[in-house]
Length: 96
Image (tube, rainbow, N blue to C red):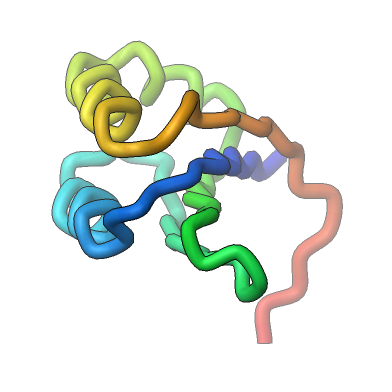
């Protein structure tokens, strides 16, 4: 079953956040199927990082990697407050 993790954050420097997501996405492991940075339309300092995996097992393997731990630490240092991690199983998907 596919798996998606949402990381909800507030950040005043959206460019730095974009660079973190864009520049480090090449270091993610096998099983990663996509990554998106979304900004709330009505809350310009609030973002969602959406990370898609082909399975929960690959996501868990990613979490154990030192590269992922380093990325999460850099993320935590650049956002206001603590990131909120939301774990979701994909029940239905239709890509157009």
